[in-house]
Image 1: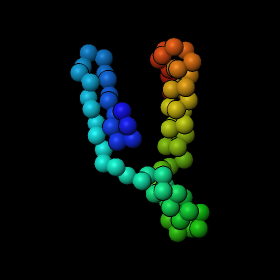
Image 2: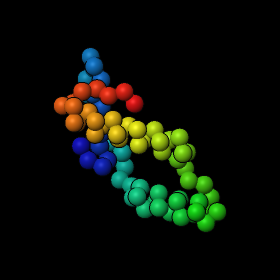
Image 3: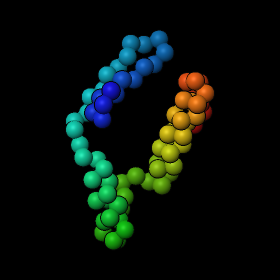
Amino acid sequence: MSETRAIVRRAGQEPEIIDRPADFHLGRNLDYFAKAALGQGTFPISPAGILQTAAALEAVFKSVDANGAWMTV
């Protein structure tokens, strides 16, 4: 895997490889944030979406600590 490739594995199915084009997403997100902070636009991810992403990342860390056990998000 890389910044542009993900492999999705679903029970009972073949792995799915997803390739995305290269993108400087960190810089783009910083630009969106700066514009929103200056009142020149809105950040493209809602507060709820940010919290969902943080919850999913927390579940990944908990899963690692629990030897790969599934976690509820």
